[in-house]
Image (cartoon, rainbow, N blue to C red; front, side, top):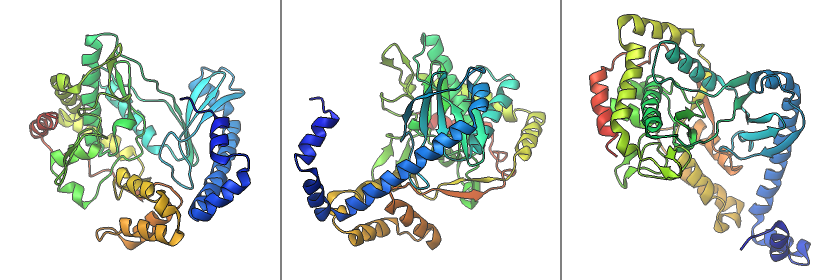
Length: 387
């Protein structure tokens, strides 16, 4: 059955919508507060987007559309990411010249990732990798829209998985996390990372981690939970056959399990390209040191954990009492390994249906895999791809 907006309004609100809404809000007072909040946040986000689009038209035309005029907006699609900072999300904006992605945050990570991909390609990494074009502004950025496309043939599929292996090596050496299935798109024979804000995710724990832990933390591989075993749902490599991160020939999905050799070969090539000789290692260190120690996203908890709490907080039982909802969120966030100020910030964000967002200033120079030997990492990689 196809539901139209009018049909939903008629079924839900009836002939006396005011009375129905009053009755609904009496039973679920938290719902009224959240609706009001979300509408206000939506209004502010759209106004902010339009002002920034207007200010950047000339730069957008030159960067993304070969100097074609960027004129009237045809379509706006919100909600393409988790909400942060009072409901702000990634937005797909379409105008006559084409489509672009708007991100309501600084694009330092994407800019550095794109720079590193160019660095690898310039040093004869083959097959070449691809990164989305990026235009950074103060507090926000614009990015090229990357669209899903199938591989043309099996040779292209093999190159796809070789490139994926190289991406994993890059993520491993740049200490990237959050490279989950929704963050990678198969654009023909190119796997493209869409969101690289969580680079250099290092801590004291990072320096004593095993290569397997570091590989799994990137998000490309399934993670192991002692209670429920291997978790495949959000990883790029796993048993799923759905999603735009899966390459296809025609409509047929291509399982990564058939391309383990290509993944390992691509990883090895990228590693040799970056750290294969003392001269290459020195060049990579110089490249790393050119990066400024800027504020970067820091994940105190997996996004999936926050999302579970957020979903629980909008169940009917939680919408009957603001106090009960607050207690539910606070209890769910409680843990001893995190500073209290972080937990308070998590609670505040989740109350307004945001995914908590933190940044830290990180010095990158000491963390680039110098202590890891390729044979050891490859041995671990071969184990990791046996999903």
